Image (cartoon, rainbow over all chains, first blue to last red; front, side, top):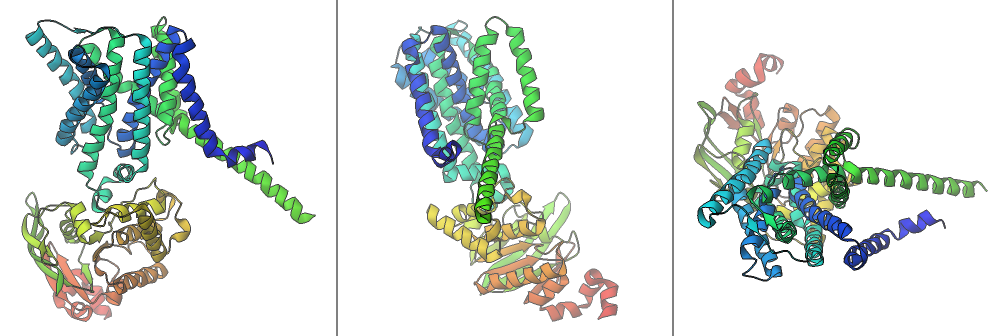
Length: 328
Length: 245
């Protein structure tokens, strides 16, 4: 019995085991890690939430949403406005719910739009939110931006980790549920899905809104790290584009694709952008072009292909052995 | 007793009447053919029945219940299922999963995962695609994709099945197989309305034929009546057929 055979047999156990190890490693990081590394992992965790939530809706239904920044910004402003009123964990929930409501409204109005129109509308939503928030701020509070009391980095870190765990678990089960199947069939052919008994409008609006909960929650948690936010920072389109780029890079076919993408780009952003910001965008562009040209299914697709090849080679070897036995 | 009735069905696209003032009925357990030259409004009529398009005027009743204003997913749950002229499959999903969608969502009551899986594999076996259940549908031939659509429609447990050009592009042997399949579906107790250009299939299995031309119903009757009807011969079957018969 060779090692590869063992791997193949206990694949499930291995996956769960390595996931648990990874979680333990991340969870214990604040105990021994440097602040720089803690902040980097924190940023990666934030992008994991955004990318996994984006892939859940847009990746499966094919509706390209540019709305993550709107949900994220709503979360940030929720934190800014409620920081003295409510405890931190409650604000996280409230931020998620407010994003849910905004997405529900947006979805009801726009999910009849298809293709590019939906994408453009959701992009318009970010700009609209930024302007309306800035206007209200100047009219009501006579100020620009909000100050947020700094929380210590391990509190933020564990809050973000909590949001990640909830997001990943919930979305994992949604994707495997019949709602997940419904979303996938909408992506495959919306007309056929509708004619097979799926209330496509309801599925789209609801899943769009659910995916926004997590993005809003991530915004709440991230706000105290920035100390000061204003409408342009909170509703920055970067929060919409980065998750998409990460999903394309990681591949949307598998659940872990967006997570890989978030990890790689989160790492690059933190290491390159701090002192070499031009190089960050240069590298960013080159990687994107290379992935789109050579790996249309992303890194996740590449891993799957390699697994398939190794599997086939194993089978071949086994077949050969069996043949030899038959000959003797 | 008619399972489906239409009264004064009309559909305008701008100034063009794609279907105008059509009355029809389909009885329980029948196979009814819907024929007519290209652009006669056959597929539009299908789209009106399955609510892909809203009616301009008129009304459609299914088992006495009015269908006006309902959404396609409601129509499907009521027991009307359909296939498409240009196949609309979930290309990246395996065959079995395509059919599972029908089993999961097409019935009015909530169905358990195990039951849905059983329904789906039964439907696949019924159309003869069990061997390919794990193949992505986009890798299948057009003929097989059309069968996937039939299996998917059957998995929704319909009482009335609308088949839109199931046999277009099939060779004679495949047409015979498809005819057999349609008869088998009817024998399960499912009423069938089919749009078809393959006259051999229409004449072979339909009990009744409805003829559309420029959106109007110009004839209706048994296959024999239709093939002797002078208007039909002139506008649809053409001079050659008359000369031949």
